[in-house]
Image 1 (cartoon, rainbow, N blue to C red):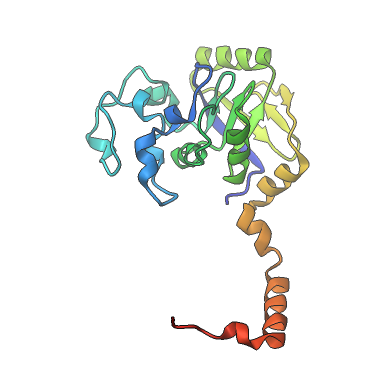
Image 2: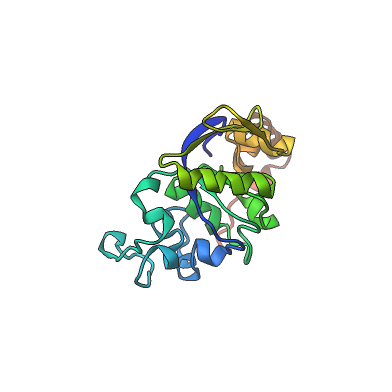
Length: 216
């Protein structure tokens, strides 16, 4: 998992409340058993004028010019600004996969659905909670100034605006530790790889029959 320390990025404002996970990555794309390739289908039903299917070449599709991510001024955005209850609906982990694989590193919203919020941290995506009033002002700033960017300093837990103003945010210490160090659940376990190998070797020495292979 990619570590997150300090990130500066262009902001894309998604001015919709209660965005559910089926809007983030529609159900037909959940057929894939891979964990990659979901970025082109992020917000698929809003992003394109035709219906998308797995394996379809996105270059041949008709983009919706009115959707925020298709507007030239937001190309390359890596920070998504959203409204209340972002990520509601089903608990599909494909939603943070799609956001991260599109290129987003952080989200800013007043609130998130609980399971989606947890899944973001496990996949290297930082979901920041700020008060409604601050989020509303960021929406106004993003709309008023093309190229509007923010700096997110996770170690200091601050969103830094272009004029230097800082907006503090809270994050659980363990989640912060994992993101700063780039540890997903597997990475956390592999910190103890030497101890795991030593345990397995000692157990095999005591119980050598565990190494036998049964052929049916």
